[in-house]
Image (tube, rainbow, N blue to C red; front, side, top):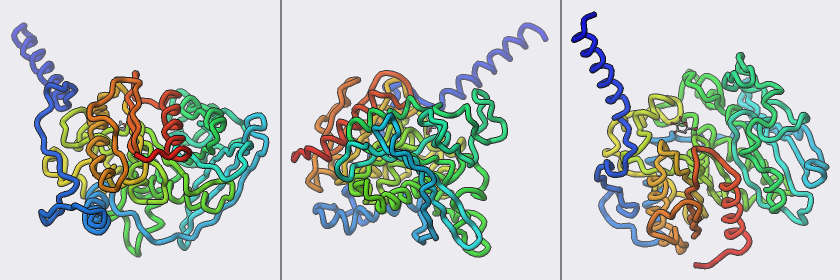
Length: 429
Ligand code: GTR
């Protein structure tokens, strides 16, 4: 190869590289102007001005968009369900908690699917307690190092760190995520805590919806969800609601105070669960980013084409039409948060998590506030994104912390402070 040829090749390589990364913007000064849809303008152009109009007219419009065009419709049919306490330890955490495992089995004809709930309830409680419910990424055995907890038998991602090569979890994964689950601290603060493995509901890979919960709902001859029916995020959100069904039967839990939380993709699922199921008393979205709390019309970080390409199974098929076309979406994520109003919502960002667009996460909480105010609750108590480590709490709360995409003790401290404020010392704004 001669010199000119190699220079040309180098030029092409650099160009390719630049173009590949140029598709995502991480520079605030490069955010293009965008028009944020008004949460109060009805499809017929009229303005929603009253609480009644919100519940009767505008909320259903917004809800219908998210269910038909984004996450997909969740089936309303009730499956056969049974609960079996598979283990109970009244002396867990050195006597401070009762630990239970509940196997929930769903049935439709010959098809069945099991979901395991792991829960800890403070022994000091004198009455039914509020509970933090969240999904985990690697199986219930990952949230605490305890050899008596059952290891998930569902599909898990292969992981060299633990020698997983056959998509089956093993002993080495016990406690692997424990730093994200400060169970002792949660118990000390008087809350119960429960988790389910998201892979029990729908393993996180694109298999054309042959495994997971979806097939239990297929009509005769149906092989995949219709274009407006649920994807994986919908299935995960459904599982959260089914865990809540169980808590309603458990006398130790105050089922009117169940807080649903989730990190990243599971933060997207938590928001969608809270939007659909008004029994959830509070929703916490940790670093949920694109199609979670972050605004889509702001060109910063992950975009719709990228998320649909990397995770074609997360959303409904209809959602693909917004690839490279954020401007055409008639709604934005502040309206997803508004669907949770007037219940408390807490959103977190991490300073280095640019992929999730921290400012976009803040802005959607800010703009959702208008709806909270219509419903006589305080939105965010600020108008500008606060600096790091300065949480702000109205009925919507928000913080940004230093560091990367993760769940830390700092995040949990704020979740619990927010929950304390909302549940125990309800402030009237
Ligand atoms: C990323 C994805 C994000 C976020 C994250 C996660 O790869 O692009 O939207 O969901 O995964 O769930 O960890």
